[in-house]
Structure formats: structure tokens, C-alpha cells
Amino acid sequence: MPNYTSDSEAVGALFQAFKDCKAEIAKVIFGQEEAVNMVLISILSGGHCLLVGVPGLAKTLLVQTVSRVLDLSYNRIQFTPDLMPSDITGSEILGEDRSFKFIKGPIFANIILADEINRTPPKTQAALLEAMQEKNVTIAGVNNRLPQPFFVLATQNPIEQEGTYPLPEAQLDRFMFNILLEYPSLEEEIKVVRNTTSGQKSELKQVLNGEEILYFQDLLKHIPVTDHVLEYAVRLVHKTRPGNSLAPEITNQFLSWGAGPRASQMLIQGAKCHAVLNGKFSPDIEDVRAIALPTLRHRLVRNYKAEAGGYTIDRIIKELF
Image 1: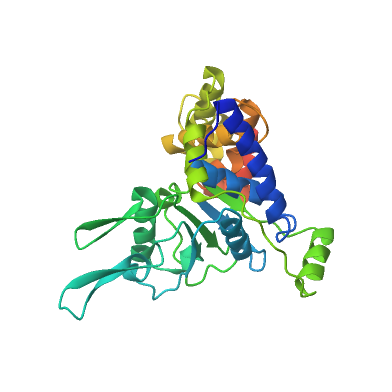
Image 2: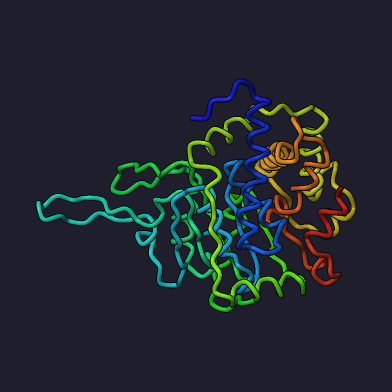
């Protein structure tokens, strides 16, 4: 367990560790700085992430790289239409001694990459999402605790919707962030191609470990938040709810459903982490705004007027600021 003389020293150590993590990840992942920031913030805040992007944007490589830099065990689960819940959680088998024993599934790791989570039926999705929420797996009435820390980083392909099972809003709410991965710039793509076709391999250093991550997660819970920042976050979430007394015209006109109380919690949790990782000891309104898009975009439901008028979720959220 890390031993710091004061919280301010621990905050300084976390700030430095974050910079070191980013430097190591940048050896392998070129560009995608915002996505890297948000993945690290969600892990340090104890949340799960949904990564949305077209094929070839290094979603899998990003998760693998993060697990190596943080020295965490990692498993990838490729979601397919025939995947069963027991293929994720594990199952009991009859041993040679005629007694049942539990064989752990791939979910028993610190970081789980749930690849193309929308390609598997709802029953299998629910098994994963239950484990995300409860941090344990129940088999034959016995609770099996998942290793700590535990994170699920799920990916979705936004362009192929045939034969998919979109996650319901209630299940999307379990994810702290919805992170959009954009195409790289011309310069970034040149770097990617040069480095991936040259045969060079980057040596990654381990920056943190599981015990330190758990320590910093607990530290972030004790970061103070002023009343006006907390109220700003909660008011922002209330503004997303149609028919609410705080809802502006754009919400009533273009949204059919708003964010729930978990969004307010995630905004404050993420803002605390964002503040510390930017050298501050307490979050301000700018920290709330900095993580508002990935926190809210999967919790709001547009109506047909918004789709017909070309109003994206991100545009609506920005106008709510």
C-alpha cells in the first residue's frame, strides 16, 4: 500500500503517475489524446467505458496498452450471436472425484475488453452488465468475487447495425463514459503507418499497479467539492429532462428522455479526477464541462425532430452549458 505523508503529496504523486502513463501509452497509440485521458479518468474513478468507433482505430490496442502500463490482468471477450452467459462468467463441471467445481470464465481479470458488445443477445449482455454492477458472479448460489480493481471497456462499431442487439438505455447507464474515437489526422496516420510497418517494438514501462489504483480511487473520493460546483453538475443533468422546471426549450423540443441521478454522480466523480490530473486540489465548473460530453451522450435520447433537424446529442449538450 502506498505510504504518503499527506493527501497533497498523494495528489501530487497521482498527477505525476498520470503524466507518466500518458507518455508510455503515447509510445504505442498516436493521437486519440482525449480518448486516452477519458479511459484513464474512468479507471481511476472506478467506472466502466464504452468505446465507439469504426474498425481500425486501435480500440483493442488501446485497452491492451493501458492494461500493460497499469500492470493489470487482461482478458478479451469477442462477443458473437452464439455467446452464452456461461462463456463469460464460467460454469461448474463434474470433476473426476464426482464433485462439482467452478471453472472461472474470462471475466475473472482486472480489465475486460468486451469487443463488439452489441453483437451478442440481451441475455449474455445482461450477464456482463450484472458483473459490472455487482463486482461478483453468482454460480449455483455461490458468490464469486471478481478481482479488484475491475473495469470493463466495451467497444461498439457504429456503422454495422445489421444483426446487432443495441444496449438498452438502462444498461448503457452502467457505463461511466461513452467515448467516441475519431479518425486520426493526416500527420497522426502517417506516424501510425510508419511505426506499425517498420517492425519496431516499443518497450512499455509499468507505471502503476492494482494496489496503487485502489488507493488512488479511495483518495479521489475524499477530494472536496464546493457547493456551487456540485449544484452546477446537478442542474446540468436536470436540464436534460424534458418537462422539468429547469429544462430549456432545446430539451423540450429535441429530447424524449433525459439523464438520471447516476449521471450527476458520475459528473462529480469524473470532475474530481479531471481536476487532480490537471494539478488542482478541487474541481471547478470547467472540470465538470470537460467530462460532460462522454458522461451524458449515452444517457440522453433524441426524438425524431432532433434527428430530422440534424441536432446531434453532443450539440444539444453543448447548448445546455
